[in-house]
Every structure is written in C-alpha cells, then in structure tokens.
Length: 174
Image 1 (cartoon, rainbow, N blue to C red):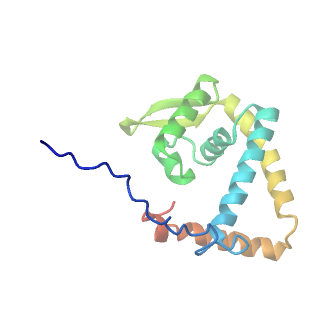
Image 2: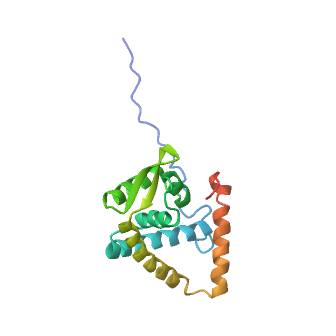
Image 3: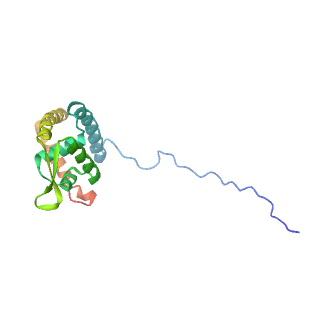
C-alpha cells in the first residue's frame, strides 16, 4: 500500500516589512542643478516648438539645426550631432524633412566623398532670419529678470558647465 504524503497548505510567513515610499534620500529640487537645467530646457523646448511651428512651420529641433547651419555652413551631420548633443537618428530624420521642404541642401563633401556638406538653401535662410528674431526676443524675455552683469555671470557659468560635461558624460563637449 502506497502512502501519499498528506497535502499541506503552504505555510504563510509574516508579511515582509515594506518600507514607506518616504524612506530614504530625496532630491531637493530647489537646489539640484541637473533638475533645474532639465526643467528649464524642457519647458523652453516645448514652448518654442509650439511657437515656431505655429508661426514659422519649423520645430525647435529643426530650428536648432538651421541655426547651426547658419553659423557653420557646409558642416556634416556628425558636427550637428556633436554640437547640439543629439543622436544621429533624430538629426538624420530632421535633415531629411528639412531637405524635402527645400530648407537645406545636402551634397557630397568635396574634400571627403564619404560625408555630406549640409547648408541652408535661400528659402531655409529666409525662414532662419525670421525665426532668429523670435528666438532672440524669447531669450530677452527669459533673461529680463536679471541685471546685465548677472546675465554675463550666468552665461559664463553655463559655458563653464558645458565645458565640464565630460566630467559626467565621459566625452568632451563641443
């Protein structure tokens, strides 16, 4: 006669202590610089996209690319990625849109057949010249709470932070 073991109900252990969500360290969002920079950048980008799209038909990403092309005509996409801090994919997609709309010209670089020289077209430059007026006015309004010397200090501090990004990214900033 075979004996099967009696069925047992699993033994229930005492519930584990679940720590309260408020246990542990938290950020002080009134003092944490990366949060300030991120929040400001996100809000500026979102409002700029809405404004630039509505008034000029370009997104803030397209504007960033166009503004860099006005400063450095004929640069390759890799330079755009490096300066703006975007990955290759979004830059490539935005360049394709800008090219289809006749705002940028993409040509094989004369000095290196493997890369492309990207420039604003006359139409792209005309849109750039309209957007830059709005961009400079937005900057003026943003900084209007600061005195002239405070603006200069802020710009110097931001430049130094930008130059020091390699301390956290492992890459040199451009």
